[in-house]
Every structure is written in structure tokens, then in C-alpha cells.
Image 1 (cartoon, protein in one colour):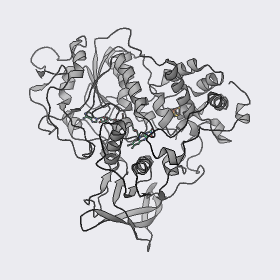
Image 2: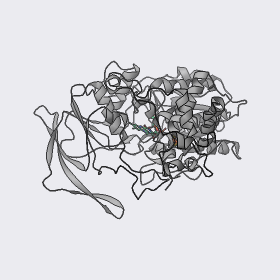
Image 3: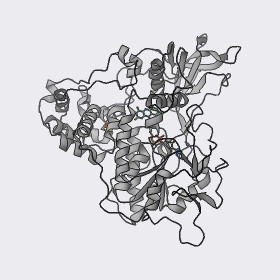
Image 4: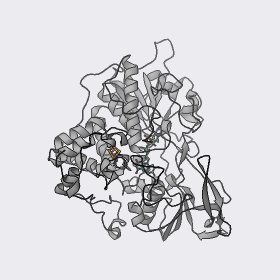
Amino acid sequence: MGKITGFLEYSRQLPDRRPVAVRIRDWKEVYSSFPEERAREQAARCMDCGIPFCHDGCPLGNLIPEWNDLVYRGNWREAAERLQATHNFPEFTGRLCPAPCEAACVLGIAAEPVTIERMEYEIIEHAWAEGWVVPQPPESETSKSVAIVGSGPAGLACAQQLRRAGHRVVVYERAAKPGGLLRYGIPEFKMEKHVLDRRLEQLRVEGVEFVCNTIVGLHRDGTGTVPGDVAVDVSGQPAKVADDGGGSGVDDGKSTAGREASSTYAATTYAATIPSGAVSPAGADLVTSSISGLELMERYHAVVLAVGTGISRDLDIPGRDLDGIHLALDFLKPANQVAEGSLPASPVSADGRKVVILGGGDTGADCLGTAHRQGAESVKQLEIMPRPPDTRPAGTPWPMYPMIFRTTSAHEEGGEQYYSITTKEFLGDTEGRVRAINTEEVAMELQDGRPVFQPVPGTEREIECDMVLLALGFTGVEQTGIIGELGLDVTSRGTISVDSNWMTSTARVFACGDGARGQSLIVWATAEGRSAASAVDAYLSGGESLLPAPVAPGTLPIH
Ligand SMILES: Cc1cc2nc3c(=O)[nH]c(=O)nc-3n(C[C@H](O)[C@H](O)[C@H](O)COP(=O)(O)OP(=O)(O)OC[C@H]3O[C@@H](n4cnc5c(N)ncnc54)[C@H](O)[C@@H]3O)c2cc1C
Ligand code: SF4
């Protein structure tokens, strides 16, 4: 503990947010930077508790008191080493994590918690600026190879860990660029994409191979059926699936030909049929190639599915087919593509629109900030749940993550929020475009612990709008494509079923991240990716893995 009286001397502070009038005119991140002295003061607030509950609050088990102490002492380099000992991507969570560690901070019992998330940002950005974040290629190669499907934080963490353990790792991604929701869901004003690209370059130099625009589990007819005998080789050449007596057909991992060729992988060009709800038509990439799950199993010693939860929750009420009603990702994805320069203009822009967002969560807030930057005339955000209390409710005592009222930077920028309100119908104009929604207030009751909503009589009203965004969460993995092809067991929540070693119901196929856990957070996806890598490494080596496994499948937050 650097400064014994730090928590008494300094109050919790965060860097200023850029003025609203300035920031809604651009897509740059919202926070200004922290002067080094202030960062060190904030680190000095850490009490180095005998039992640091923040360790348990963070799914990665980040060594928070250790790096706070090192920052207070100005030893940034060692702080960066300690941070990276448990975390592959602190620059993502340092910007985007809701910080369950801070909810579990002991100082938070009597005062405001330590600014742990911000400290993570300060340490890793210091490290990048000083050139201390360097590629860590493996010292020796194993003869094993792993295909990872999906390049969100779970797939990337898993890929980096397995590659550093010496395995050949090829990441397949159906979108044009890797990153998953980090690239196409989360808006630029929360994390600029060069932050992601910088980290991806590190993975590439370490030897992780990326095969983009390639959907796994669908074939040329777009049906997701088991392939015939002609498939697409990672070398870019049509190849026969290796079941012709030539051994197991598993790539021996020693061939460098496949590795070099991955960037030229585009032997066939056609638009695959994309499962409904999987990729928005508005922001869809041209999927130029496909490969079956079975072929991956032929070619690699293990396959890891880090496919996220691709199915957005819809709202099946009268008027749903009117023009102007979109799933949130159909709106956010092209906005991100425009911001990164890969699309000239969004086909789903809020410019000049009266926007209603259904869903009061973080995705709704991301739609709110995006709509304002696109020039929406007005934005209203509706939530069926009651407004959360301002202080910790009895049901979520310390050190649990409390359901309290939180305002994001996007809420500071304008718009109106409504709680305890449900939408009964979308109303259209004569042209078939949405012109209003019909709403009603509701009262929530708990029945057997589950929320039930009763309409409040006499509260029906119309809200005028000409664009509606559905930010209602996700219902699970797409069960067509690879899940169906490999016949994987799926849980009642629509997630991929895994055993205690992250293996699915099909041997050699593993799963992690939102696809296995359900809709969650970057920190959980990263922790699961790291843990699944450890399990795959143990499976491939036939013994114990030296890779860390911070969480087990199904690990719950502090409860
Ligand atoms: C709008 C939005 C904002 C969010 N903001 C935050 C935030 O601020 N903080 C936070 O902690 N969390 C946030 N989240 C949640 C967080 O982004 C997810 O929990 C996290 O990205 C899950 O990681 P993942 O790797 O499991 O899946 P994903 O990031 O969803 O990545 C899965 C990838 O798999 C690919 N894929 C799927 N099927 C196939 C296939 N058959 N073939 C090839 N590729 C395939 C997909 O294209 C995708 O790139 C947000 C989510 C959304 C939707
Ligand atoms: S990753 Fe999230 S939970 Fe873990 S230390 Fe960082 S902010 Fe806290």
C-alpha cells in the first residue's frame, strides 16, 4: 500500500468528459485524458485490503491492489506487467467495462470506490505509449493446430493464449474484419477502432492467422448442410476433404504453406445465405467464402466456437413489418462502418428522424449516442422495467453488482428516458412507414421471483416517431449453420452446452464467450476465452496446461 492515508486525503475523480456540444459533432472517445499526477493520486486511494474483494469482482482476477500500489510509486512498467499477467486486452475493459470490481471494492462500503477501471486504462495506455506492449511469439512450436470461429473478445483471447503456447491458430470470421461486437456493435465514441486494430496487429505478429469474410457452417447453397467432397482449403485451392485414407486428415500444424496462404484465402466468391437475424442486411458484409464445421474438424486438432449470441430479440406486435423499425445492430453496425471509413453512408441513418429506442440498457444507450451524432431530431428511450433506485437496493448488498440508476455519457447528450412503459403496437402512415407507437404504462410484480408486468388502466398513449430501434437483448446462438451441422447440444437458454472442460457435446469442439455463456460482457468473454484456451491446451498436450484458467464454465458473478 503506497500511501496509507490516500483514501482519506483524495476523493474519487475521473477525467473530464469532452463538452457535449463538441463531442456530438464527432465520433471520438468521450473522455479527456488524466494528467499523470491525478492518476497516481487515484491509485493512492487503494487500501490494499487484507482480503481484496475486487479480485473476486473481476472475472479475470486482475491483481488490482498490486498495480495500484505500483502506479502510486510511479513504477508504470511493472504495473503494466502485472496487469498483462492476467489480461490480454486491458485497453478494451479500461474503456468499456462496467467494473464489477468497483462494486466489490472495500472502500466502497464507506466511501466511493477506487477508480479501478480508469487505472487499468491509464496503465495500459502508458505501456502502449512507451512501447512496452510488444508481440510475444512462442519460443517453440507444437505440432498442433486450432481453428477458432469468431473474433470477438472471447475468440481473440483464446487465440492469443493458444498461440503463445506454441499452437498454430487460425481465426475464422464471417465479417470483413476481426473484432466481433468490439468492432461492429460498440460505437466509436466508446472505443475508437484503432485501439482494436493496434491489438490485432500484435496478434498477427505473434502468428495468429485471420480468415475473414468466411462463414463457418454454411455452404455454397447457403443451407448449412454437411458438405460434399469438395471444399475450400486454407491455401485457397479447392481440396478434397481428407477422409480418403490419408490418415486422420488433421493438419500436422508444421506446414507453413497454409499459414502463408491464409491472407490469400478467397478461392470462391459468392454471397452465402445468411441466417435470419444473424447479420443485418443493412450492414451485412459480403461473405465471400464458407467452410464447413466438419472440414475444420478434419483440418485442425481442435475447434473453438466463440460465435457470440447472434440472434437479436425482436418484438412481435402489430405493425412490426412497417418501414423504419430496425434491430439495434442493424443500426449500429453501418454507423460503425461509416465511422471507420468502410461504408460511405449509413442506409439506416437517424439524421432528421424522430427516434424511439425500445430498451433501456447499454445497447439502447449506444443507439442514443449514435442517433445524436447522426443528427436525430429527437430521441426517446423506453424501458419496461421500473427506474432503478439511486442507491444500492437491499437485494444487491456489497460486494454484489448493484442494480442502481446509472447514466452513461450518451444520456448526458440529450434525449428523454421513460420507465415502466410497454409498447403495444406500431402505427403506420399511408406509405407504410412507422409514424408512432402505441404505449401503456405497466406496474411490475414479482411472481416466483420473476417479473410480471400489469397494465395500468387509462395510461395508453401514442408517441410520435419515424424511426424505431429495438435494443431488447439477444436470445442465444444461431442454431442453423455450424451448431446444427455439428449437432451440438444447446441449453434451454439457447446457448452452446459445454462440459467442465469447455468441450461441447462433440469431441474436439470447444465453446466459450457469449455463445456459451449467454449475452454478457467483454471481461467475461475475455476470461472465458483464456480459460477455454487452457482447456484446449491441456487436451492437445494430454496433460496439464500452464495457461491460466480464471473462470470455470458457468461461473457466476459474486452473488
Ligand atoms: C451494442 C453493444 C454494446 C455493448 N457494449 C458493451 C460494453 O460497453 N461493455 C461490455 O463489457 N460489453 C458490452 N457489450 C457486450 C460485449 O460486446 C459482448 O459480451 C462480447 O463482445 C462477447 O464476445 P464474444 O467474443 O463472445 O462474441 P462477439 O463479440 O459477438 O463475437 C462473435 C463473432 O463470431 C462471428 N461469428 C458468428 N458465427 C460465425 C460463423 N458461423 N462463422 C464465422 N464467424 C462467425 C461473428 O461475426 C462475431 O464477429 C455490448 C454488446 C452490444 C451488442
Ligand atoms: S476488467 Fe473490469 S472487472 Fe476487471 S479490473 Fe478491469 S474494470 Fe474491473
